Image (cartoon, rainbow, N blue to C red; front, side, top):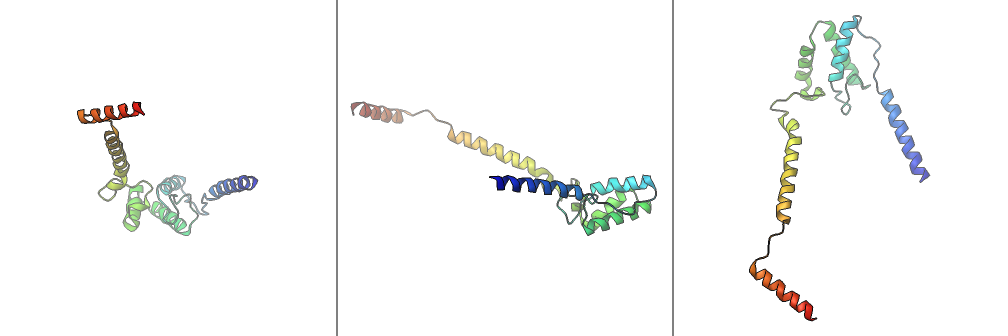
Length: 154
């Protein structure tokens, strides 16, 4: 029991320290604080393509560092956030955005929770209908009466 508790404590401590260490720090932010703020906001919206569901701002992966550099270069060049997003989507697809847009390619992704909910409701409804007790017909009542009389005699 102690070994399990120790293992759980070590796991939680490791996970927490890893999460703290996962925040990426770049050596060269943009000189203009307003442009750096725009770049940082954009970095929070862009997915690290190597990591699982982590923004490029939070990732220490080499690709995330490269993408942060691209974002900063494009912000410095005067591109708008929409133009930068469009550039990255054209290059990597909608997957690069942490919140992909609703379109014909992502309709199933956005609609699947509702589809699953409808399937669960249909399944529960079908199960209720199947398990609902129907009243006995005349033949079944007569058979039940006969069985109960036979039970009383024994």
